[in-house]
Structures are given as structure tokens and as C-alpha cells.
Amino acid sequence: MAFAQLAHVPAPEPGSGPWSANLRRDKGELVLAGHALSDLADAGTPVYLVDEEDMKARARAWVDAMGDGDVYYAGKSFLTPAVASWMLEAGLCIDTASEGELRIALAGGVPGNRIGLHGNSKSDATLRLALEAGIGRIVVDSPGEVDQIAALAAELGTVAPCFVRVTTGVHAGGHEFIATAHEDQKFGLSLATGAAMDVVAAITASPHLEFLGLHSHIGSQILDAEGFAAAARAVMAFAGELSSRGISVPEVDLGGGYGIQYTGLDPKPLSEKDMIAGIRSAIEASCQEAGIPAPRLSIEPGRSISGPAGMTLYRVGATKDVMTDDGVRRYVSVDGGMSDNVRPALYGADYTALLGRDSEAELVPTRVVGMHCESGDIVVKDVALPADVTRGDLILVAATGAYGRSMASNYNMVRRPGVLAVSDTGTAWLVKPETWEDVLGLFPDL
Ligand SMILES: *Cc1c(COP(=O)(O)O)cnc(C)c1O
Picture 1 (cartoon, rainbow, N blue to C red):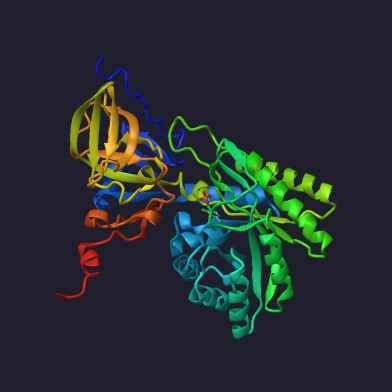
Picture 2: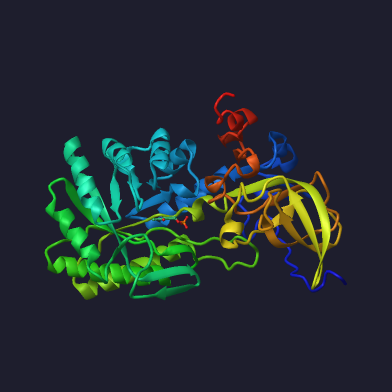
């Protein structure tokens, strides 16, 4: 068998692995919340689909698991005014990291006091907008920001609510976390060098700033609680030090990075409840040791809410069989690619895909690729798809809801696809598909 030596990775069927809760097969065809993919494709392809009830359920699961504490949805993973309002309704707050995200959260009707603002380089304009909106928390990320925020708060006659982002030396992703004493990255203030201590002291000394708590974000795609627990221990040890200087830490925000399944090979992440229980027990143990009361907890999940709820529907164009050292690989090209999902090119991220229709053909090792002028323009690196996949077929790629549309580009002058919310009650655009007028309209009149 010419195909035998290449990775043979069948996609999991709906109802398992990375697929959203309301995707099914009906007489062989994929159906999302009662809508056949072939009907959804009438809106044009590529198109991002969001399983609306699935996304809302994931948001509620975090709120339920959290109990007393706040869940900030990380807007950078995928934010629209409607999504912001869904999150608000589910009991979440919104975490923003730019003026644009802040504007979208506000446009979605989220009150300022339920919004957080991040960023390693915040502009005066962004900070002013945040303060005018009555922002709930600004996460301070560098020493210079203390004076910058204090001056703006003074000018606006307000007091700015501040968290301090600390670097704990814990970096996590997948199953592993590493702990290092030194830091060589742009985010946060070091516990080890005393930078975090200096900034907390400066905030507490300013009449225009209020110190609300400490923030830590250790990485992404983290599947168990160990890395968060290690970070929590480091943060709580620092809170103990602050306490001995008379500074109390009312709240600790442990950031986002809760992992999801992208393919059938990925292990299942810990449930929301077990994750929160693991984090809480680490915090409580550290607080006992430091002799301080346990602070309020907040977290910032992004991809674990938006990721598995989203999918991308593409139409197949050219196909070809390519001889490799290990046998024949089928290349199936689709009508999008790195412009609508840059993660494979950016981080070597893996995805999986299903053919939209029924097929009895044997499964063959396939690579789904985009239509862009880069050989790294890969959509799904390895998946076993039926041998009869052909031009005009529909392909559905799982778990593209986070960092897909939010990182999309117009590379090769493509139009960025729209995002369609799909539910039992109907469909609605969350983001409209770009038109040629949108793209050509960017250029000055000739
Ligand atoms: C990216 C980010 C998040 C969300 O990460 P996910 O992996 O999408 O959960 C949360 N907080 C901060 C500070 C981040 O940078």
C-alpha cells in the first residue's frame, strides 16, 4: 500500500474530540444545530461557523465552576458586540487588550466596571477611554505605567483600579510546566528582581490609584491544574511579603490558557470544576502557610470558550497526489488558508477535518492546504480523508473559533470570511463577510 507509511489520522466523528456539542451526521451529511452544511455554505465559503448554544454553555460552565469569583472572557480569542453581550448574559466579565477590543466590549453593552484592560504598551488614548468608561481593572505591566495612569486619572478626577501583572517564572503549555528564576520576555513585572514590589508600592502611594490585586498569566493550551497551582503558590508567597509590609491583596487573577482538544489525538483537558478546585486548593494551602486570608479569585479563559464552539467551512478546489519518501500524500486545497487561520503557520498548530458529505471511499493520508503563496500555508497537516474528495466538496475544520477570525488577514488580497452564529432558531452574522467593496474601498480614489 503506497499510503501505508504516512500518518493515518482519521478525524473523530461528531459528538467526540474537538467537535462542538450540536454537530451531527444526518444521512451521512454534517448538520450543525439542525442546519445542513450544504445550506450553510450558501452564505459563501470560506465561512466561520459558531455553535451558539455550545459557546454559551462553555461560558456558563466556567461561571458555575468558579462560584464566588469572576470569569473574564479573553476577548482577543474572538470578540464581537454580540459575543460580548452573550458573555455578559452568562455572568462573565470581558478581558480586553487594546482600544479596539475595549470599544467592541462597550458596543456590546458591557458596563465599564465589568471590563478589564491588559497590554504591555497601553496608549494614553486607550487608558483615557478605559477610565472614562469606569473600567473595572487596569492590569499594570511596566513601571512607567504607574505615572502614566496616575496622571490620566488625576486629569479625569478619578481613581484608577489597578492590578499588577507579575512574572512568577512559571511557564506552562500542554502537560508540562517549567519554572525558571529569570525572565526574558515582554510581559509582567518580576517577583525575583523586586520590580513587582516597587510597582505595588508606587500604586499604594498614589492618591489616584487603587491597588486591587495581583495578576499572573503563565501560557496557553494548558490541560491540567499543576502549572496554575505553581503560579498561585508564587503569587501567594509574594502576597505574604506584601502583607508583612501592611499591603493586603484582595484579589488574584490567574489569567487564561485553559487548553482544548484540536484533534482526536489531543488528551481531554481537565473539567472546569476540577481545574478551579485544583487552583483553589493551591491558593488556600499557600495562604495558610503565609498566614493571610484567601483572596478572591478571577480567571481569564479565552480559547476554552470560543475555540471548540467555532469551525471553518471551506470548499475544495484543486487536489493532487504527491510522492513523498514515505508514500503518496494527497493534497486537498481549499478556498482559504493562512489568511483565516494563521495558527498552523505561526505555531505549527494541528487541526482536524471532516468531509461534509457521506463517502464509502477508503481513507487516505491527506494534507489540507490553503490557496496562499506560501508552502507553509497548511490548514490540516495530517488527516485521513476519503479518497474521493473532489473539487466542490465541503470540508469542515474543527475548533477554529479562537484566534481564527481574530488573527485573520487579507493576505493575497482575499476577503476575510464572515462569522455565522448557528442555532436551532436560525443563523445570524456575528461578523459580516468582507465584500470586494470593503477591500477595494481601503485604497484612495484613483
Ligand atoms: C491570551 C491571554 C488570555 C487567554 O488565553 P487563552 O489561551 O485563550 O485562554 C488570558 N489572559 C491573558 C493575559 C492573555 O494574554
